Length: 270
Image (cartoon, rainbow, N blue to C red; front, side):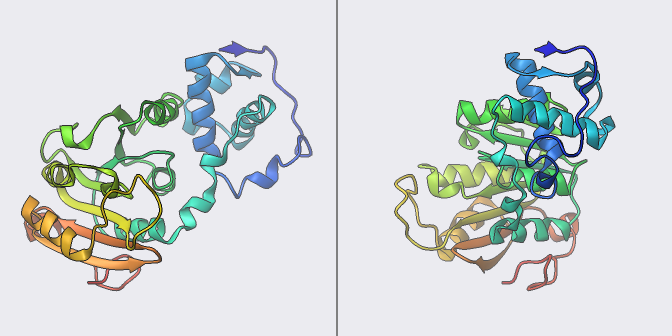
């Protein structure tokens, strides 16, 4: 990784699209990813050592923008960090549920390109998160984010069926657009329920589609069978456009806390 001595003098009228991106991107997450990738590959040059040495939360907005500017100069695409992902109905539904319950840790299974993970990190910046993905390139992408300063994020290239975490080791497990891809869906569900102390949160496609990687169509009835067999004590279902949303309670009612009110912004309807 190269450090260019002397601070870059970048004005607000600098490169095209510089500040008009602020409201459309998770800038601090993108800056963390660029720092992590630079540390791993040495492919970026930064204007001063402080941009790398400082803790991410200590960086000023101007310093964050300097990091992003270096990435743009190098032709790095930051599409994965667009805030438009948080506007997806299924992502909003999951975040709404999580805002309505108490939890301190979360396992996100199949984090992929961060469609849910990045809005989550933005909304819950101090929550301990473990992100697992079976694909090496996805895990490396997320490790760069952690390496660059997202200290609450822990990343592992794992298959949920192999139980990457001990039983009852996190409060919430999210399985978002994941189960329809997994051949041994029963084993995946059992592993998720066994790992969660409080809740599992699931979204799946609600109708057949042309994606050849979708090997299951998981209906409300089938999800009920799977999660009750795995040990969930309560299930709630709701629909969002094109998807089925489900939450399952994995602990006794007194341990998990009261249910969110059905049909409210925070709580799923039945």
